[in-house]
Each structure stands twice: as C-alpha cells, then as structure tokens.
Image 1 (cartoon, rainbow, N blue to C red):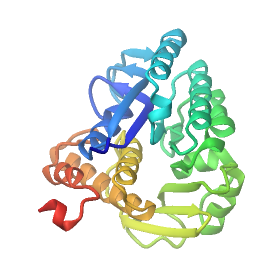
Image 2: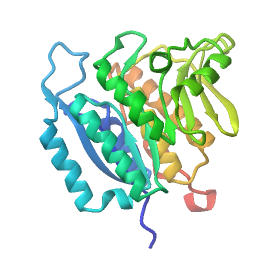
Image 3: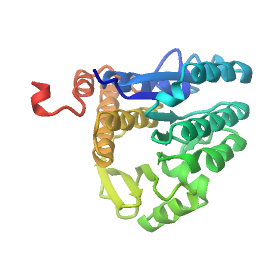
Image 4: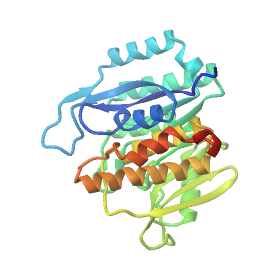
Length: 287
C-alpha cells in the first residue's frame, strides 16, 4: 500500500479557535495527508480577545522538537514543508536552518512559505527582525509563497494595485525562478466588482482566480488557505486547481462562521468536511 503524502507543518497553535496549525492541520489530515505539526508558539486564543495566555516556545524547547523530528527521519520522508507564524527571532533562525537542511537531504520536497507577518488592518504584527528572516532566508527557499497584499508590499516596498505591480513584486521578492508566487486576497484596479482575486505568478506565466468577496474577515483565513493548497497538491491536484479548491473551501468556512455568528474560522461545515474526504478522487473513486 502506498504511504500517504507527508507534511511537516511549522506554525502557531492555539487552545481555542482555528489559526496556524489549529486551522491547517485538520483539512490536511481530512484529505488523507499525514502531518507532523511543530508549534512555534502556543497561545490560549488569538490576540482578538481581551486576554491572551501562552507564549512563543523557548528556543531550547523548540530546538529539541526539531531534533526529535530529525531523529525520526522526518525531513527525509517529507513531501511538503509548510511554515507560517513565527513568534521569536531565535525560532525564526532555527526554522530557516531546518528548512535548508530538509531541502538539502530531500530535494524533491515542496516548501510552501506563508509569510504570516501582517495585514491591512493591524499592520505588521511581528517584529521587523522576524519579517527580515522571512524575506531574506525563508522566501528564497520557497517553492510556493502565499503572501497577502500587505505582506507582499512590506516585503518588497512595492504597492500592489495592478498586475504590473505584482510582477514587479515577484521579481523583488527574490524567490527562485521556478517558484510560484500565490498572491492572496488581492483587489487590483481591474478586479471585478465585489470580487477578491488570488493570482498565481510562476515561470509559466500568470493566472487569475477571482471569487466573491465576502463581507467578513476572520483570523486564520490565510492559514486555512495555505493548508488547503497543500492538501490539494498532496491529493494530486495541479496547482491552479489546488488554489481554486482552497479558495472555495476557505470561502465556505468563512460563510459558515458568519452563519453561526463566530468570531473565527469554523471547520465544522458538513460540505466542507465531505469535500476534503474526496479531494482529488475521480468520479469512480467517489462511488
């Protein structure tokens, strides 16, 4: 029997809610991927609440977890590495070292870097030194990068208003020539009314993937989207279809949260869960 695709997911974890690994882990597992989840921080909840408990993992503790992953041969086994929010500079450096080591021993793996560092409302919400590590060390190793427009503008100094701006930003980002930039949540000058776009820029050109703009913004949206892209790729979907599937399922999770009056992404919608179980299957396989 063929082993399922294997993912190492290095990002935040919360006790309550769905952000970081607490958003990305379930969809990847439901789609049939095996996931090793390594937390960079453990918080009680997102910062959107009146109180926040927990902290970034102490460097020596995080280093010990990475060493355990090495001892189990996880970098050699991995088909994907996904990185997201990082809460301390020491941990950021160790994440970059680990990804570099993994890519050296396993050149076939795909690395998706989600540079979780800010958004239009709150602005930059990690120290600039951590954002610098993402720009200077993590993103140059990425096969896929999923910044939002704020992150892309901060990383490149390039305003994101037009398709030409995105092309210039991709050049300024210093990702590998064969890598794909997946710019999420874009509203460009020529984006259709009431729409958001994800734009895919790679060596084969540019594709645009519009979707209805929902009147809701929730923590964890980007983390869920990145996990869903990996889930789609792991189930054999081509990248454009994986992006569109991730868009539609993320929108479904947001709509369900709005119906429930929830303040965060919700992963309990029945259609959302059923879709993950059959992701990438042919019609015959579903039957």
